[in-house]
Amino acid sequence: MRAVIAPDPGGPDALVVADLPDPEPGPGELVVDMAATAVNRADTLQRQGFYPPPPGASDVLGLECSGVVSAVGEGVDAWSVGDEVCALLASGGYGEKVLVPAGQVMPVPAGLDLVTAGALPEVACTVWSNVFMIAGLREDETLLVHGGGGGIGTFAIQLAHALGARVVTTAGSEEKLEVCRSLGADVAVNYKEQDFVEEVAKATDGRGADVILDNMGAKYLPRNVDALATEGRLVVIGMQGGTKAELDLGVLMRKRGAVIATSLRARPVDEKAAICASVVEHVWPVVADGAVRVLVHATLPLEEAGEAHRIMEASDHIGKIVLTSGRTAPRKVGA
Ligand SMILES: NC(=O)c1ccc[n+]([C@@H]2O[C@H](COP(=O)([O-])OP(=O)(O)OC[C@H]3O[C@@H](n4cnc5c(N)ncnc54)[C@H](OP(=O)(O)O)[C@@H]3O)[C@@H](O)[C@H]2O)c1
Image (cartoon, rainbow, N blue to C red; front, side):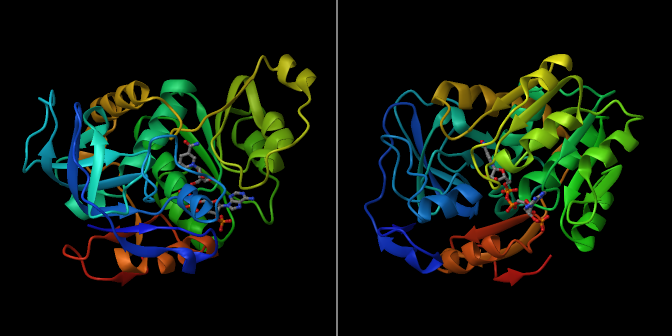
């Protein structure tokens, strides 16, 4: 099979298309003939040599895919050859054939095309597991989502809005803020011009955000804690603003707040399977009825993975950047 790897760490040109042996499913695993995958920030870090795959996982990049089941291993009863599926992966999505534990495979939500489904698992599993399973956002609460124009942000805004929560978000351009509002954000804050702590306070009559989904890490830690409501939960999922910061435990304690940092990729297979099952139960219905959709900024063939990484690192995209195995969709850039 053809697959994209980064044999030597570097910029987007470090990605190469290699011929690799087709994977064979072991017990409890299956092989998906990939229709589409999508770019995640973790892929760009892996390419640079900063975020190696977990032990035992393939060197092929890619944390998600969609496609058709082409082989099933011993003990796999839930899936058959020919099923159209999407899957959450520890690695391997940028390959024409993808090996995946059966518990991380999900059906394609009704009404969604197979290519778009390739950009769904990572946003759906990350947002659902962090905002709802871990932070327990309720419908009478306020969610602050940083990076509202990104893949995660665009999905989190819609899902929280669809499930009845109030949403405040941050983004760095008027175009992104406009899209965030159209997706259901009640308040969209330009972080380059406004102070999000003040804007959250205004939007909540001084109460603060009950849950914060944060992609910035260190850079926003003190201000995120300031923006939290009493009994608020700050979930850090990205470190785009660095890893080390000072935390005033006094402020956190007075609010009886929680700071949680998680990585989906590092979680054991059984935890990922539980997340996937919960996502299918709770998230797929709102995707199927059109209340929540995957915004696709660009669709490129797998061979153009380097260009797809360049687009992500330029950070002007809104939503997800999709890569196809080439047989399924034409090249398209621009929402
Ligand atoms: N822990 C996990 O399990 C997990 C899983 C998936 C993703 N993630 C992380 O989640 C983050 C988002 O992923 P993604 O796929 O959505 O990436 P993405 O599409 O690149 O979105 C990131 C967004 O952050 C915005 N941003 C940059 N600086 C900002 C700032 N100072 N304040 C607010 N927003 C800012 C960017 O655009 P603008 O600056 O133009 O607004 C961009 O829209 C990444 O850090 C990724 O690594 C973590």
